[in-house]
Length: 93
Image 1 (cartoon, rainbow, N blue to C red):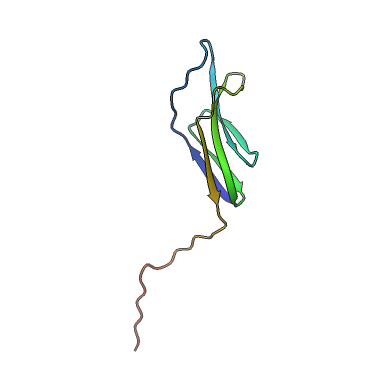
Image 2 (image 1 turned 135 degrees about the vertical axis):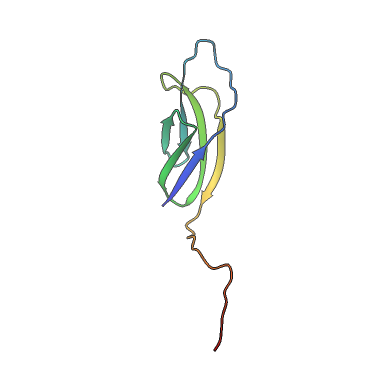
């Protein structure tokens, strides 16, 4: 399982006058969601596969507002990262 860090940069969106802005809703296409006021969240224990992440603003009653700020696809592989030497020296004696 892998960890996915989602970080967004906001863009201006117009909402009807009187709208009270709430949190962001972060959603992965595997059904995982997180509501947060933060500009970044972490999803842990995400299985290898291809996903779409989307982020949308909510109002104070947790209703989604406007269109997603971001919607992007990414792939998690089950490859393992191992430190290896960049050079190898062999001495024969």
